[in-house]
Length: 181
Image 1: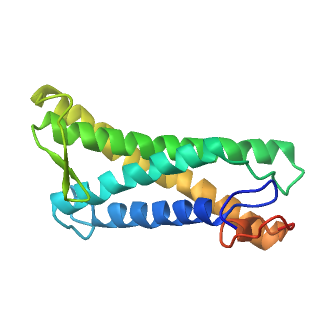
Image 2: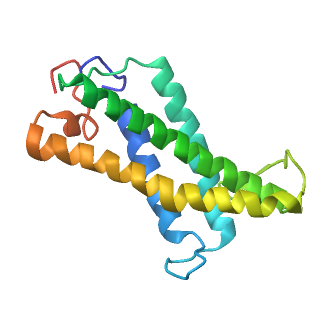
């Protein structure tokens, strides 16, 4: 089943979720680090993958807006609200990371090639006064806010797997069609 239903995610939503997760993991582990603690790839590779992640994020947002949102399996309204807020903040944080990374490159006067191939025009022009601010926002979003939100998201998933055992986690692993998850 490709499309989402009221009882579960379809293959497209699942694919967009896990491709985004893999891309974010790759970007996080290969990002330049001021303290030398990560595997560093070229800035061009990091930027190319980041631009691709931007497209994935846009696709995910448009897919979510156009699709049925599966109903929570839990009856705990407060925790369902917290889970929805954490997911929304996680996507907003990724958007912030992508925006500040893009703006940082452009303010340096650099260019971005989508997937390392398709050049994107610099929409803001070089502005050295803003490079440091974008770097700070990018670093804070990447190294503080994102890990905290991701931790909450993973803890929520573990809660469903270990304590609730309600099938919520499996809904984002494998499409179930219209049957109950």
